[in-house]
Length: 56
Image (cartoon, rainbow, N blue to C red):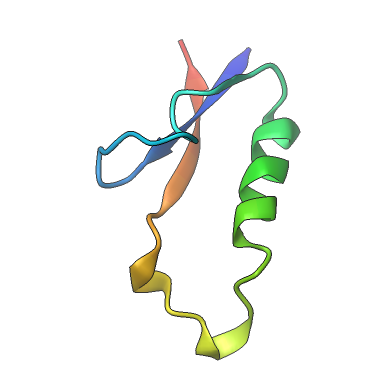
């Protein structure tokens, strides 16, 4: 099974479309991206929402 990162708004960027053999690898990439967001002072509207989906 393989996994791909997608954006909920349907746009593509340097993160979307990457194919991962392991779910945890995709998760770790997203974790690195969002690591600088902390607590309630984060402005989530400035960043796209990513999702890890099974690649078929």
